[in-house]
Image 1 (cartoon, rainbow, N blue to C red):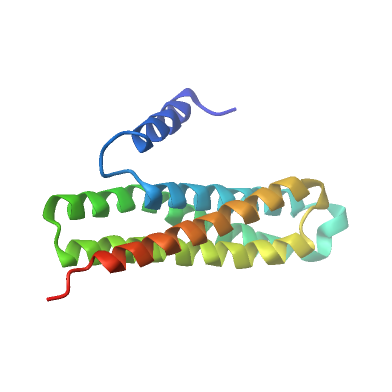
Image 2: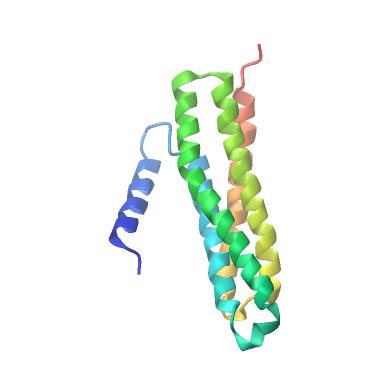
Length: 162
């Protein structure tokens, strides 16, 4: 069951995402979607560990859970970091702040790509009863890679040539 405070934070983020202000925007949304995908990988890995049918994959599933958990945590942190870096750019309109925003989006894309690679392995060895969760994880992570990658390209076009 989701705690009330978590629900309120999600609702607040979704409402803020639709407001007429610089952030949060596409980068923060891409980070959230990637974090959700990574969280689903952790879930499937945890439902694989300790199951008799998947016993030979226990150690690998444990490593996957740990690695995907790290990706989830980093992407979760990038939700706010992306918003902060883009707010800085909106305030300063400097090349330096745009580079920071672009670097942030690039890292979101790279982390999500790492999550996709982890997902591909877990699809082969993970608990087959959670195929829907694996499909959602892969789709979320691929969407995050693509969205953040597009943002990097757009932000690089904004850099002022001096």
